[in-house]
Length: 114
Image (tube, rainbow, N blue to C red; front, top):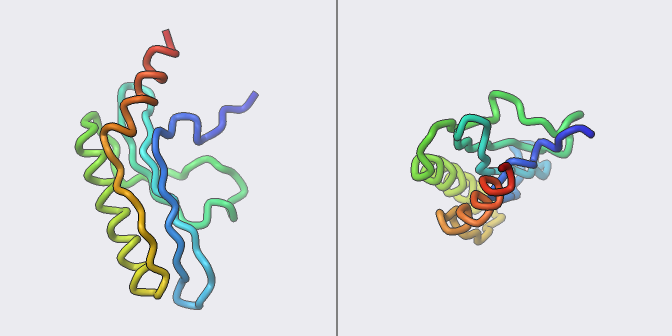
């Protein structure tokens, strides 16, 4: 069975806006845990229109070992995208990524792999 690309994602936010031509766009920002204890933050536009659900290398905004750095990168991207969405007339309220929401899946990921 093929591994689903969202398997390692611990948290995700979806922002909606319109592009310059007025077409709807969906932006997904996520935090995932990769092999080697690496945290990664991804951001992709219109994933549903891609032929595969695998993220591209260019989708990653951050890769590193510190959870706090990943949270900072994810929340900066989220804040930027929400700001654009609001300026386009599509204001959305979304909670920021938090350490607490990542700890539970991290424990499942860690202890489930023994």
